[in-house]
Length: 365
Image 1 (cartoon, rainbow, N blue to C red):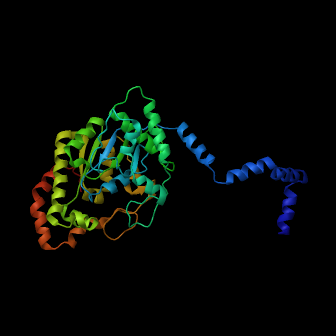
Image 2 (tube, one colour):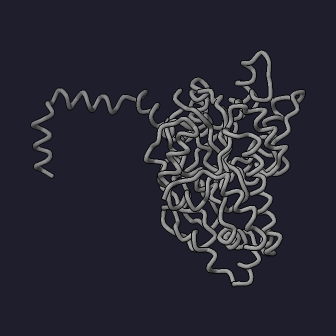
Image 3 (tube, rainbow, N blue to C red):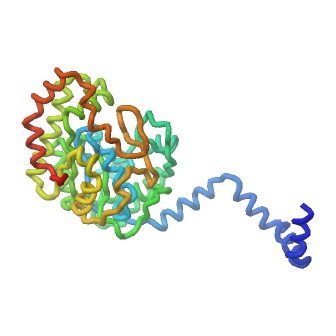
């Protein structure tokens, strides 16, 4: 200790020592710091106001990922996370009403508060309080700093800046408010973005939903995944036993989604692409390079690993949790089924599965 003191005496002159002592004892400065160290509303107000001053509009088309649950939609959305040319919604987009898989019906004669209440995603409140996690069994959470009050203010201000309001403006206002109110979003709000990318299960099943979607986003894109029904059913029935425990009822939901994917591809052509889940797992780079071209964005290595806010994240699996990587064992869920169930699935799905594979993007081995 004496050696340190002697060294300090050698480096700091007596005159400078007096200046430092005076600086540290300055009352007004000390009061300002002590006041700032105490949690108070003025700090939040300062953050709030500076965010309002630097809002970046998000008026991009939506690239929607949608099909029946347990088909890889979560994984695909996580592979887009962090890409510098997209705004990737971090969870499942739940703006639908009365359920997430109904495209929201907006009354242009209503006021902005009602529009916002209709679109607001309640899950945000849980993530703000407890942290982000993709599924309840995951003990790992990630900080999700988000101000709903700021989101509402940005939403209304965006609309107030317009002389006339159409349906697209309301959705643009919502996306602008969402991504600007997400304070710790590591993906910068720059002008290089091409799309907002979001996943919503089953939204694409309804033809009316798709009409509304492409009416609002005429330049929008739809990406649908199709999973081998023999692997899909074990995952679905384990994830939601009450909904999928009955084999025939469960497979009928797979059929409904698969037939919708075929219909959407035939109706909307180049704006729709169908990807095999198995290709996403085993040919990830080829699939993501294809989707980069599909969306007109540059391929980026970040697209090869699922992340949340650029942090590696574990798979949303119904089976034993695995590390932060693409889970190859999803290709072998059929081994949990008995031969009789496998025969039933084969009989019910063979024709439609062949048709949807014919409409799917083909990747070389």
